[in-house]
Image 1 (spheres, rainbow, N blue to C red):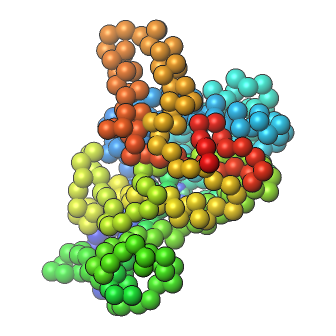
Image 2: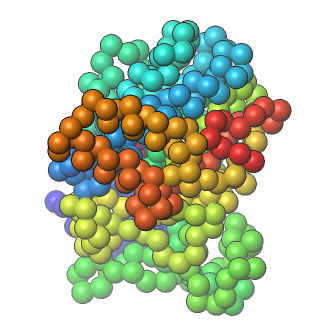
Image 3: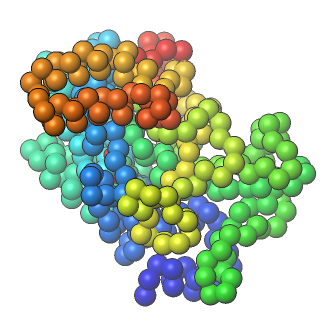
Amino acid sequence: MSLRAELLARIAANGPLSVAEYMQECLLHPRFGYYTTREPFGSAGDFVTAPEISQMFGELVGLCLAQAWADQGRPAAFTLAEAGPGRGTLMADILRAAGQLPGFREAANVVLIEASDRLRNEQRRTLEGIQLTFVNTCAELPDAPLFFVANEFFDALPIRQFQRDQTHWRERQIGEADGDLCFGLGPLSPQPALAGRLDDTVSGDLVEYCPAAAPAVDATGRRIAEYGGAGLIIDYGDWRSLGDTLQALKSRSPVDPLASPGEADLTAHVDFEALSAAAPCACTRVTPQGIFLERLGITARAQALASRLSGAALEQHIAAHRRLTHPQEMGNLFKVLGLFPHAGTPPPGLEV
Ligand code: SAH
């Protein structure tokens, strides 16, 4: 059986799926899910993330978190957590760079929030020699000071989509037509969670809502507010999204999201306004990734690394710097939201 056949059987038995139910199955189905079965990262994969482009990304994130830790009086015994660690590359770079601050590594309890068993094994391999704790959700993080990062995690959380019809909404659904999956619209219903979106939309507009995002920000923000710490949420998206941003990528090319369930990566733009609104701690202004990395000194770090390189390796390094920071590459599309305690200062590189 394929995932497509399984989903069609489920639709025949129980009716259409929400976009969130479809995304959840495509990404994390125990047998056919994209993250369960595929190797999406790296040069042979479907997409390349910032930590896979250059070690500079994780080093600067690590120094940012380590500085926030030092600014808060170097709490002994704290949680260093990453949500959706992929191959473990970012955490490895964070630990190497932040380890330069005496005492940081010894005090860090490394916790990884990861749903895929296959990727947990890959993370264990990358981070060999480091004591790791795995959890399924941010709600399971220990009650302790929390230094947290999530890069391209929130874009993988399932979204629901709603099309406005006067003052009500119809949910976009996935049903069956001519033996294949197809999009349709559900019945007209009020959606109290979307009350705020009646101000900035007109009939016919489509808006997205990510039910799992607020609980994740609430769980991390609550620990930062109560015990101290800092959080960096890095992802593509904007303050508020409008329209259909569901995107499927296969071999780095966009494909129809319904064309190959479980075989393509599915993501949606992150709505940073919703994340900020859900944070029970202080939040920074949403800052473009390029500006954040420049403020943390990526140019100086790039020059230091370049002095040891030549030929193709040097060209690749220069291209990686550009890719991470240039406004026409990842510099502007990706944004950073910082979390910090109410009475504290924003993490380095960010401002309120
Ligand atoms: N941060 C990494 C990988 C991003 S891909 C990088 O920058 O390279 C998304 C990651 O989130 C994968 O590790 C995936 O398995 C994990 N993930 C996706 N949905 C999840 C969920 N609901 N709960 C926990 N982890 C999830």
